[in-house]
Amino acid sequence: MIIDTKFLGETEIKEEDILTFEQGLLGLKDVTRFVLQPIDEDLPLAILQSVENKEIGFVIAYPFAFKEDYSFDLSEEDYEQLKIEKIEDVLTYTIVTMKETFQESTMNLLAPLIINMEKKFGKQIVLQDNKSYPLRYPMQILEGSAE
Image 1 (cartoon, rainbow, N blue to C red):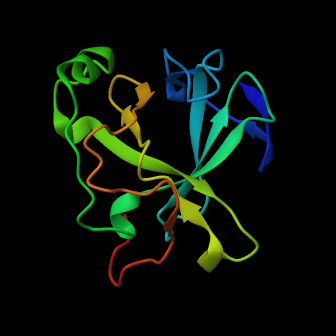
Image 2 (cartoon, rainbow, N blue to C red):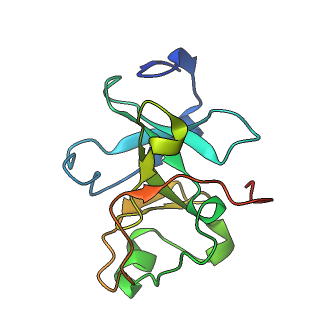
C-alpha cells in the first residue's frame, strides 16, 4: 500500500505495520491509524505518520536515550487497551517539537506514546504522577544511548 507522508513523500507500507490508536492522540481523537517510519537507524528518532491524513506526522523520540531515568507506571486500563501480554512487546516514544536546531528541539515527557509492537496498538497517556516531567524537555543525547 502506498501512502503520502508529511516528511518522506510517497512511501510504501504494509497493512500489518499499521498501528491503531483507538483513542487517537491528544487533540486528534479521530485520527487512529499510524505507521512508524525510521529516520536513521543510528538515531533514537522516528516518524509517526498518519495513514489517513498526510499532513499529520510527528517526529518522535526514544526518551531513554535522552533521559535514562525516565519511568512511569501503566494502569490496568492501559494494559487492557493495549492488549499487553509481555512488557517486552512495548515501546515508549515521546513527541518532539522540532526547532531550528536539534539542540533547541524538545520532547514531551508528560504525555508519552505507548506502543504494543506485537499487537499493533498504541495509546498516548498523560502522566498523572509525573515526577515533574516537563512538557518541553531538551533533546541532548546521552553518551552511548542509542536504541
